Image 1 (tube, rainbow, N blue to C red):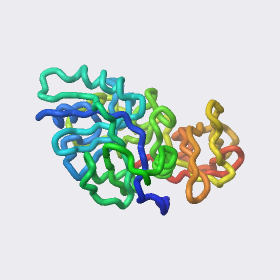
Image 2 (image 1 turned 90 degrees about the vertical axis):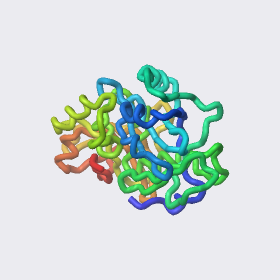
Image 3 (image 1 turned 30 degrees about the horizontal axis):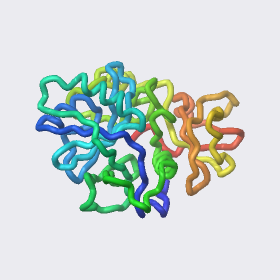
Image 4 (image 1 turned 180 degrees about the vertical axis):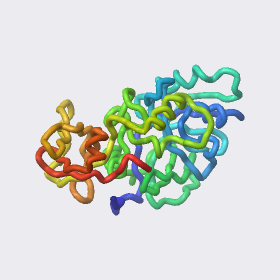
Length: 283
């Protein structure tokens, strides 16, 4: 889907809890824990990855940037303490230090932006067909678009929010992050054996996908209300909507849908209105 025309000015503010990793072993240590290729992150590049349990379930999604002297780790809002506790358990003999910064920085996705000298870190970040850069600054600029806008932008490219569209009960394949947040060429990481076994089996019961629908599906249900089901061609429920966002063409819905319904390529609908899959579970 096309990126909104308002994408560049100020960037999109992405709510994140921030951890900082310092020390000579910061990359090799963290590379053994996150699903992305931490060792490849240098100033000017960034990565999107996951922290998993030993059972391969998602603890948080992670944005990773390199300031040149330390790694900035942006985790889902509210997940900072849980991520810190888990990572700290694996910090034993390494010459690395895990800290919570005294002042939390702001994380922004910038579409079509160039490196900014005042940034704490700045790196190119490829997310499916969204070509963006990750910018970490001391405070969000006045022109930054808010969290709802960033969620809508990411949703249009098939990325959900932890705690809303996917969470601790999901593995990378169920969240459709197995080909964008997982490196299949790096060494071991926490939960790797389970993830690899899932990939070799090649079957997953459900996938998070982005669905395009008309504006009649807006607005999103009010807080506390149930989201509607995704209905297949024979009238049976085949999935559950997890969030609804405005998009240039009407509405973008994220939904967890049965893989069998996605493979059949049958007609899908939500609240009697037709929807179509706009992001595949792949890259």
